[in-house]
Image 1 (spheres, rainbow, N blue to C red):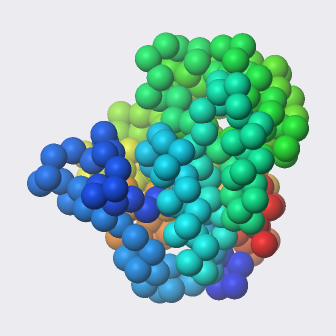
Image 2 (spheres, rainbow, N blue to C red):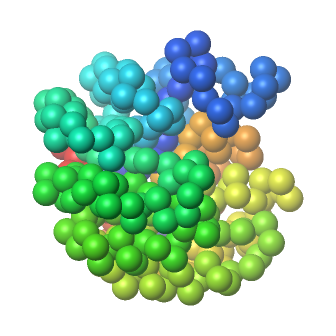
Length: 282
């Protein structure tokens, strides 16, 4: 099942440049990821797959990177939105967001919770205050968490009921092991909150060490399709991280295959419509 080229959206990819920022996850100089990945590198892959728009997501925890990504987005037609980093606990958060929202392509915030040393970071009072500020502005929050943190997401959803959240990489289950639990039970509770959406992203790299196969991805993708429905699922490539495992085209194909049978309307929703709605893309 295909999606009209003018409708396809990649809801999750990155740009980075190690000459500008020190990215802890890139590894040493021998790593194939330890180089600049910029719009000109991604553009041919998007064109080959008919992806017209994308959402650029932060990779470095700094205000400087957010400003850099917004500048890149202004000069890159296919980038329709930027999900940047902010300090959610900062007392000056309202003024920070005022400034960022002057950029038409600023569409949301991500704070990689998996890097926080303490469990329950999102439930700290000062962080909840920041999340309420996002909700007041109808700015969505991208969730990148350890599987151990999945249990607190329903609490966050209850504490900030107006906040729209996107769970990155289907909650990072242990795909390589094949163990659906306890991830599956946590996802059941999370999906019960209709303002939490899910990104069909980060799949092939989660299974890369053992040589990823669609058959191993399918039980996990099938679970989120059943829990969130096609309406709250967004395809994301997680490029260039995905290049550790396979090509951009194979990532798109793997997501389609793992999702299983879908009507044209359902496929268009997952591969475009959902991201357009969630991030209020032009």
